[in-house]
Length: 266
Image (cartoon, one colour):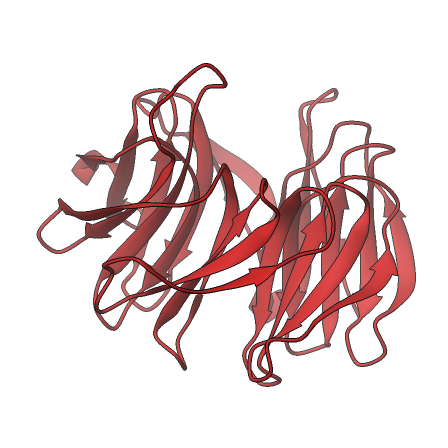
């Protein structure tokens, strides 16, 4: 895992011993860093800036997306599996204080990204097939609490608008959807430039950033109108982004040129 100084936008160092690391999540509330180490079916956790304190917890699959509830110190890892693996696909719930696997919950299919809703104390997880979003309680994670069918192939990127109680879901089929969490209504709100991956919601500017690896762009939406306001060129295959909320910065990671491009939204 590479570390970038987001104040000066400079590469600092790399952190080893994270086989097949697929996702990284930072908890500012707890000053913790979490990693999904797909190569060894573990999640890693360490205090920010102290990777020498890295500890790992075995989970029930190949972890991908991560979400964290700081009020209960609960981490959810959305797992994936190999195509020929007959074992059920699960999401793993980790108690980060005890550093133990607390629950392994079977879900309907391959997971993608996940987010935490601190108003309902719920995790939401995208399921690629069958296309849906499932909800799991943070403080009593004994199964799926609710589900929302998405009428498009491959729900992928996922984020939440806490103020307006809605989810944003970007699908492989090239559509952007919203889910009203109060009514359960699912709406297709826009087309995308191509199959998406990671998305982030900027609650300060009411903008949504959608990474599209092919043709290599970031689609920027005004979430008040759900209109596309800008398409920013990145690089072919650049499907991973990071977001720094306090500076309105978006980082796009370029696989061909081995660079990180930094964009400032104003």
